[in-house]
Picture (spheres, helix red, strand yellow):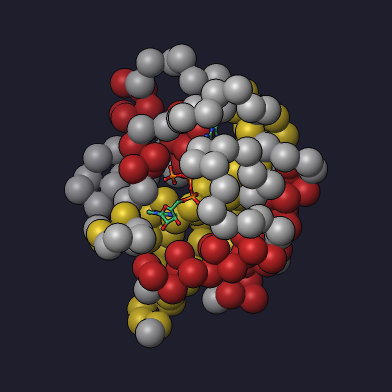
Length: 172
Ligand SMILES: Nc1ncnc2c1ncn2[C@@H]1O[C@H](COP(=O)(O)OP(=O)(O)OP(=O)(O)O)[C@@H](O)[C@H]1O
Ligand SMILES: Nc1nc2c(c(=O)[nH]1)N=C(CO)CN2
């Protein structure tokens, strides 16, 4: 079911093959799934974090979106885009992947199901997500009013996040 249009944020990541090409292809594919991409952050070269540290660096970016999709539909759209770009579902948790499209924030919604949690836990814990989100909006907050730039400032600088390239191209 579709309802009011909301502004949201997606996280994009890739650490296999043409990493920037994969992030751009995801941006290009989202429109056909009911997701309008409004703006992209710069891209960042980031140290792998999580359960698999012995893998290539990721290229990460975040995009601001507008959509009428409800949370489960938006997750399905992200999974569909991952599938179109050749990602096989069910690989190693936190392992290498050509493309990862995560729902970080959707308006002021707090949502929890077996398949989806909003805001995404990474939106308040991972520098590879927080740095591009804060670049997109210095005043961005979670639904409970937590300002992401304050969260970022309080995190230890141990996860390497390095500016890599210009923003992805978004539709005119
Ligand atoms: N906000 C969210 N955005 C995307 N996926 C989510 C979210 N909340 C929960 N999930 C669930 O997380 C599952 C695993 O996501 P993904 O395939 O990206 O695995 P992962 O990145 O290896 O591990 P994880 O996301 O658990 O840290 C998804 O299939 C989805 O059901
Ligand atoms: N730096 C970085 N590390 C990760 C990333 C990612 O996008 N960037 N995605 C992962 C899969 O959940 C696991 N680890």
